[in-house]
Length: 293
Length: 266
Image (cartoon, rainbow over all chains, first blue to last red):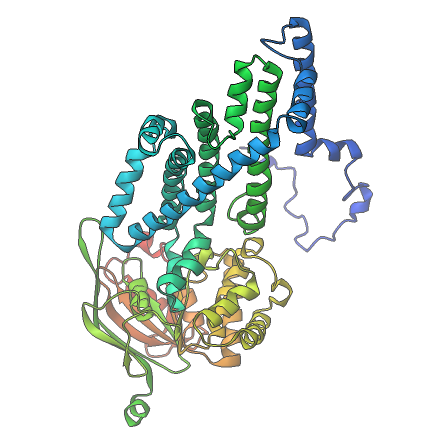
């Protein structure tokens, strides 16, 4: 408002001013203290939360003192140890993972086929869009009765429902990723004379990789949940059941700590794959490329 | 050979009409535009938005089909994109984000089968050095500033040693200081290698500085309004007493001549 009564005299020199030595203030850059560095580590913060949860679990379960309803953490750990040593928990987990990988691989192959069809023509594109919007909302587990009818009790039924849970998530995300590749990048690829398979492999797939990876992650998560649920319904085939069957069997025998141990294993394997396998891929690709923060 | 020598024109655009489809209409971008670009020309297409200058460049790049007329490069009809016409775009995302600076330049050479791996690397480093990015050869695009990304794109275009370099407002998304610096660098590079460039811009100042020849286009649809020669120093033309930029300004805004609109284009 009162520009007349400005504190800066108009006569102030307009010449360049010398740079002041910043050492006058003391610190320009200093390493953070140990506590500041520890607190900024996400893994450490989460480990603290886990420890607190474990403590709450143990205290509450001891107070409740009813191992049929809610066993203690220590009992669960013992059951987990016994399960691994004597009742073949790891073998069962391995069995589950084997079936899962079979279903996952088959789902990916079919998704690739669908996307190829979708990329070749407009009708194929509509075909994929219609199929995905139809089947994506359908929970895989709802197909289980049909699977049992068609394929009987056994791995074939499991693989069938797994394919259903992987296929649509992967196809939908990959296709969306391809569609979203920027026009500039497409023009760059064509500028080099790239066409057909080389164009897809060298331009489209890397450019759409963030979406493709999301699809792979979602497909994995869906498949893992579906598999455990399906195994709870029927897990036995050729003598060995999977993790879901382990949980179901122990519930029937009222071995509740073992049930908890089974659930624990499900969580651990899920975490392991999501945080180790997919995280590693993510850090080495899309994060490194700055395509996702 | 004789015909080429006679005309000395590298790129020959003749009576070119371009149309493109939007969601609900067919739009005419240019109407019967003709021009010739000689070897080592810095040929600028200048005009307000909607004059079809980008469409013209895309057509030369082979991304758009001519409705009428023809585009000939070294006598051969242009009908699809190719590495003999390297594009430099305005957008920063024109670099492949999953490749380093060096790999980006090399990939252009290897993907188009211009050079084998080893030779491509040497050529790539040569041009990266030319745009002063040797230190950043192993950086990924997202680690670079906008101006550096554009320099990589220019290095990539030049490394292909194309018949003609097509630049679509390459500096438009940069801040004013970087923009001026990039213009100087481009001219310096041109002094070095005398490449041929077709340069699209909507800035009169940039056209006068960068171009040796300027094609003025009028909008809706684009038609040639004038073809001018520039020395790059914005000299006063003794015949009309106007600076080149003033002359262009007058030509572009002759009808409207409102101050408001003249402020619109730099």
